[in-house]
Length: 480
Image (cartoon, rainbow, N blue to C red; front, side, top):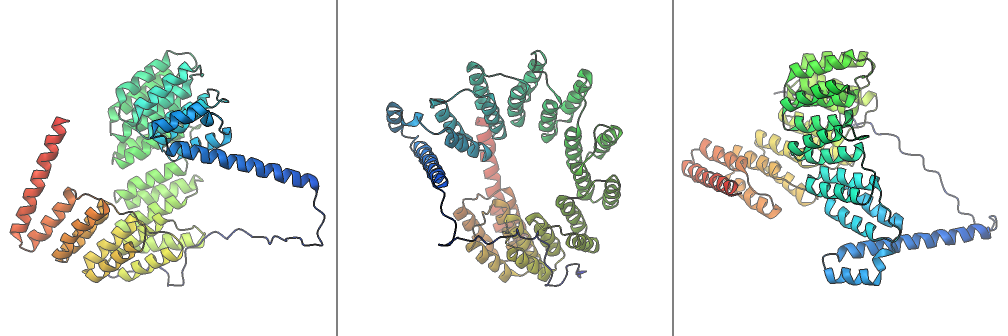
């Protein structure tokens, strides 16, 4: 297919924000004002405080590194060293691990926190830990902390119960989650609110349990809790992803009827993604106009959705118009923007524009990821450019991009499409070195390549291998 060439010429650069103004710092020489002795004393105190903080952080690091050796920990506890850490250092270490969702390490830091002479139980810390454990799908650990929280005399309020409910619902443990919801209704000052219901609704939608969602919405109506913008956005987004457009439109209409619940850019993006992702471009454009006329301004995510929708429906002229608009109004490109546009030109067979964008992406210091590389591999496979695939592999060797099974499957398919069977088989060895296991898609791609090229015995051999692997998995699953 001939490219409509919506990309501007090589001189084009996606707009970036202006750099922060840097002021020169003048260092005074002999002619400067004399040093204030008070400021010198303050500097000394600040330095001592900094040194104490560093020493405390090092102590935490050493304790955590050695925590596997029980004897060392017991010895430290006897000496009392682990009980004299600085509050700020311990709390910062705990916050870092909670933010990074390193739940095992976070719990060990929390144990250190509880051992400190200055420790006082704090419900806020407990709630943050329970929320983190919910995100990490560790409901039993969350329940254990909830019990500890009560034992230590913390105020167990609606927020704490909601955090525990979320931990169970995120793990698909809906029986326990609904039991907590009912329990909350009978405890003073712990009645569920719109946030509690929204969390539970979101978890149900993630597993496509729409019946439970209706039960929860009816329950909210019965107890007089009105859905808020987040609730409606959750419904619209999930119904759209599930292609349940009738329910999605119903939620949107109900939201628009409410004066106290205004749609926002998240509402717009969810609606556009739903229609654009299903190829309903005209409906997507109508919705975009309506949201804009309602005063909702688009975000970079909005433009990425539009680009993706136009690219997948091969509407390159409109795609180019969006890109020009982004350039005109200084919307900086993200890795998502680049991946969408690179993939679009790759699908169109315009490898020159695709390569230009790939180079531009790197010049803008945006690091390519697996999605980027998959797009390149698919395009080169489709164009029959085996030598270009070698270039992608050389790029990977000189980068730290973490590869996954999806990338290797794209590589298998590309080599198979071109009849490069030695290279295709070699991908399995590459997967093993990278710690990725072949899946059903890997073998099916290889079977397809062998079958198309009349290599019946090779295809049959792989079919038998795939059947035996499936049988082994089923046997393992039945024993479990």
